[in-house]
Image (cartoon, rainbow, N blue to C red; front, side, top):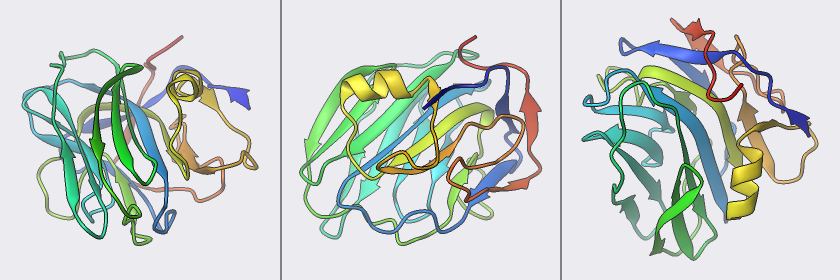
Length: 204
């Protein structure tokens, strides 16, 4: 594994700037998605990670909000901490086939019982918005987006959130450092739509 390159992040204006990563994820028995995010308009409803099938990360009511689909149900993890404008936060959602866990800045906030595989359907994962024509686009920054085919432990989350990995890392589905481009370390590069870049990163 390699240390994260510093000094860059995706910047969304809230006007449909986004990155689309196609067909990176079949359905998963276990799953983790996580990213660094900073909003410049925290009161706005904005979805910053989504595959348009009910699995997403969102800022709603100035709080983080998470959702994951399985064949039997959809679970919305209840928002707890309030977020502030222009502050970086690390958000993470894990699912081990039995329990969904939500993490906020490296601390577990809540867990929920759920069964079945995570329904991802090989759909495109969008970074910066939800779906075509949806106004809930990110107004702010996004960095070091990671997807895993296992439920990471708290220790792994707090270590991996600062790192960029080699392509042959076990259980890594995709990672987008967003270092002035939409490259995936596994080679499934994203397509950029209207995106600009910030010279700011969540850690130096």
